[in-house]
Image 1: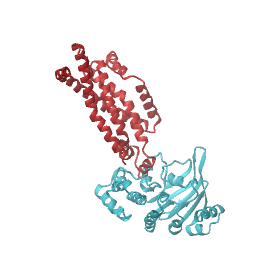
Image 2: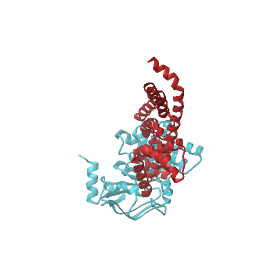
Image 3: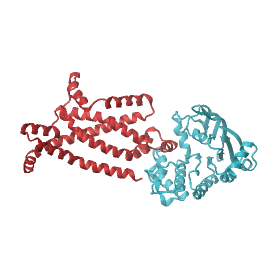
Image 4: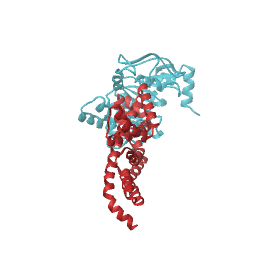
Length: 243
Length: 217
C-alpha cells in the first residue's frame, strides 16, 4: 500500500535519508525505531508530503507522492498523521478539531460528520470533552483527540510521529491503548516510536534506522529479541537498559 | 476659566463639524489600510518569490515617504496626471496607503508567530494554502495582531489631522480657522486637544482590553 523505493533526502549538505526502500502492506503495523537524528520522522513526513524528497520514489496505493502536485491533497486525505506535539487547533473545540477535515476539505454533509465525530471521541474515551478547548486538556487527552481527528478523515493508513514522546509517563498508556485497539481493528499504521514494549506487542514488523539507512528489519519479536546487527544490538541495549 | 467655558460653548458646534470629518477620515483610512495591509501581508507570506519581493519593496517605498508628501502628491500632482480627487478622497487614500505599510508588517508578524505545527496539521488533513490561512492561521493571528492594531487606530485618529494640509476641514483645521479669525488661541486649541483626547480614550481602553485578552490563553 505504501511503497518507498531508494528514497534520498538532504537538508542542505546533510543527507538524512540515504536510500530507503521499504513497503507497508494493507492492515500492517510497522514500527520505525532508531536513535534521534536517524531520519525516522523524515521518512514519515515524506510519505504524506510534509517534506519533499530528492531522489527515488514514494507511492501510496500506486499514486506517486509529490508535494508540489495537486494529487498531494488526495494522498493526505487517505494517509492521516498524528504528531508528537499533537498540533490541535487551539481556537476550536475538541469536536470542531475532529470534524474540520471532513467538513472543510472533504466537504461531507455536516450532520453526518458531527455524528461520526462524536462517535470517534467516544471511541477514544473523550465523549464528554467534545465542547472543551484543547489547551484545557492533558497531553494524553490531546493526543487522543489528535487520533480521533486523524480517524475522522477515514484514512487508509495513519502515520504516528513519536505520539507518546511529549507525554507524562503516566499518560502514555492511554494513548498506546487507543493505538493498540486501532491495530486490532486492522488499521494500517506506521509508527515512529521509542516505546519498545508497544513495538514488540503490537507491531507486525519493525524497521531499525540509523544514519539514514535501514540497518535491520524483520518481524517485531525477532528483531527486538534477537537483533542480528551490532548497531541494532547496541541501540536496543541502550534503550532497554539505560543504566 | 470663565472665558474658556464661554468660548467653548460658542465654538463647540463648529468644532463638532470638524470632529465628524475627523471620524470619516479616520474610519475610511483605517478600513483602506486594513484591506491593503492584509493584501501586502498575504503577498509577503505567500511563498511566491515575485509576490513577496513586490510586497516588500512596496512597503519600503510607502514607509520611506512622509504622509504629508503623499497627501500633497495625491491632491496636487494627480490632477496633472488626469486624476482629480476631492480633498476628502485624497486624504483617505493617502492616509490609508501610508498606514497600510505598518498594518502589513503587523499582520505579517502575527501570521509568522503561529506555530509551524499548526500549518503542518492543516496540511496533513489535506488543506491547501488558502484554507489553511482562513481556517487555521488567520483566526489565531487575530489575537496576536489586535493590540498593535488598536495602537494604529489611535495613531491614525491623530494623524488624520494631517488632512488639514490639503484643505479637509477636520477638527484641527476647523480649530485653526476659528483661532485665526478670533485670536482666542488658548481656548480654541485647548478645546481641540481635549476633543482629540476624548476620542482617543475609548480606543485606549479598547487596546487595554485587547492586551488583556491576548495575554490569557
